[in-house]
Length: 377
Ligand code: OGA
Ligand code: MN
Image (cartoon, rainbow, N blue to C red; front, side, top):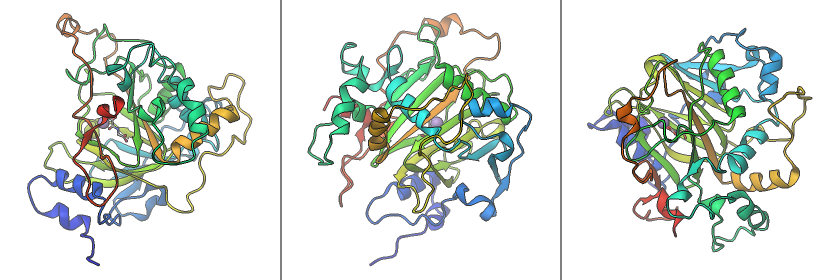
């Protein structure tokens, strides 16, 4: 058998190093060599990884526990050589508390008035109860590939707060609903720990990935104030994440994101190119991150025990899927959208160029299928 090319050799030559590495990690046959992918779960073993300093006094242990987080002093936070402002927090969640965030992402956040990809081709009445219409069938699935997909399995993205318009790449005042309070609080805690007290969670994008999904190369620059960090929370299956430079040509650094990992892009790293070329299984022996809660939670805790019948559905789902939530502050304190931005004509939202998906994982990958198109198949 031919040896798979090393990532370093791919990235070295040629103009568009990012695109080449994206294709390298996306490729299914032969599978890529993952030995250049940084794994923050292994701590400081990589020479480019260093310990990041957090503000240990930013939140109390009680507040951390209320959001399902370990005390900040116990977080394993890392920086990456060459990426000032980038902070990777290796699963700061208490054992069992990820259950809450996974369940919210599958059962609650897709609910109206939040917006999702299914809204493009379906009537509002049909996308009203995605969870209720899917749960029983997911619970009873035998695993046969021929079974029709449930709405939950067709879900690709959900937007929160200021609902991102995929076509105009803008947020606007007239497309806004309340941001979920629990996710806002979690985000505020993480931002404060990273040196950004006063962060306001104003917009969120949830991306739902299956084993054959990827997310194209992009920069998140639609927010009007870039001095606030972009927060990213990952649950379920692992992913290869590529962090590039300020220019599309800059060769990216590959890293794994596992369930519970939190990534912060701030400062000089806030506007860097990035992408998710591949979803991968968690490494063997990776501690089961999603077991039942073991500790007493404060009375005003955001995180409560998930009913067993709900968790059964979530478990089924994340066995082959990954959920990522990115949380953004859109406006500077006191800032308003300009009248021009408000009056931009509403365009059908699709996110088509952003989300990509292979139809199968077989020998000859079919051409990219746009994510949103699976909603009407
Ligand atoms: C995004 C994004 C990355 C991820 O939604 O803008 O870059 O890890 N997501 O899913
Ligand atoms: Mn992004």
